[in-house]
Length: 260
Length: 378
Image (cartoon, rainbow over the protein chains, first blue to last red):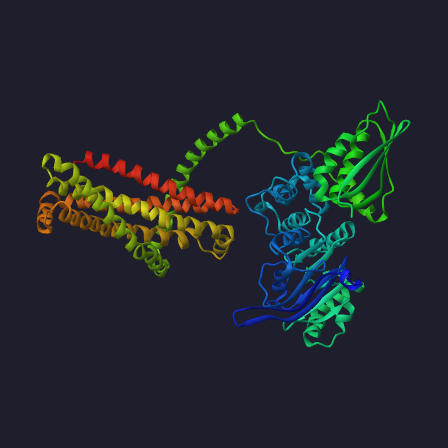
């Protein structure tokens, strides 16, 4: 195992994913390094969620190879695969909290099932996780349908972090949040990443998030990664989609906001 | 690679050194917890405890919390505590954890089982009353919506009603025909079997004719429709409520009852008599075939006997009941649908209770009709 392999917690090689006749990802290559926050941008409907869902195993791939923690997911048997799955957490776009469980039960679910924790420790850890994501104990017994959008994202993040995963996938974590909440959420992600030593893979459209929290940004267009690197380097890239993305009004405003 | 976690205590006069080592991580949390709880020092023996983390290889939130819990328990007993040898990498984590679970704000509270069951009974009684009020209320709301549509007939959702009729009536025909056919056949077979003992086979036609046209046809159809369409209505309305579609309608100035409930209700009211008629006829055919093949009575004789014993009155009673059954099914479905809360569980609960309540009320209503028709001598 060489040094580069250890550094890449996820490496995707030559990935092809499609539905019917339509090919969404066409030979995509991407590396995610340990301890970084990778922002992932691309046009709506361009396959960002498809890539995320393929890596975490919700969609079948046609070709290519996905290595997580240096292990090829195709070569793992079910048991080893489950072990890998417990080392990552996923924050779905809509939160995907279990609607029939209350907030604390949602966070406790993986703890109860996987670690077989019981009683006091189960409650304490769950409360600690909720507090880490900035919720307080008063929401514990609320049903997901009683929460605001920001609280749903936080509670879902607490559940994603329940098992202390090494990688967290965030699918548009700040979409649907007001700019203040979105800013707080960005800071939260950064703080948690430092606290827990997380590797974060973040699909986002939020230009502010790209500037403020992402170490690196990868851009997806035409089913391939067209550029990756620090956000500044992407802003000067030649690809027309990137030019439009960062050069558009919103991109310039976001940059202006960054400088002040 | 050490896959164990342990906690070693060394006594140094009045000072206790607890040296943690190994993997203090989620997977070991279950083993570490008893170690930590057993290690809490007593003030009588020690005045200072050092928690030494220098030899810990991995630590995560779980381990950090258990260290924090140990520290708090010791402090609570009046023992001075210090965490030593903490890797600077984990400093942020420990600070974060030290700030959590501060207040005893949340503890799961469990009621006594007896209280829970009494509470449950009380709630069900109240819920029954509320259901009754809700249904009366909703009947009024639907009536008002209907009146509004009568005044402004262009608001009448003709397309929607036709669509609902297709689903509720037309597509239900095969199953209604089949089930009534089978039930008519069973009734006839049982009648022949038992009546034959005292040579009264001819009376089978009386029994099957009156029973099917008056009671069984409409009941079976109502129960089928409650199970088939009532549940679907509740699920549709409920999930529309969950996805804020109803709110969307309301803010656009539409009344959800008028747009969603009224067409379904009207479709049911039109469909049930039609299905009852079809079902009853199918039941008679089933009975006729069985009396022919099993009882040896020719179809002509069956029909003649039927003409003799069944008057129009019997048929009318069955048909009169059908629209009322439709109203009950529609009302229950709509009331339950509108009560769905945000969770998937709630949707399932209300769909189930829609079917159960509708079938129950349909049978109760049938009983009331029996009393009523007996009273007016029909």
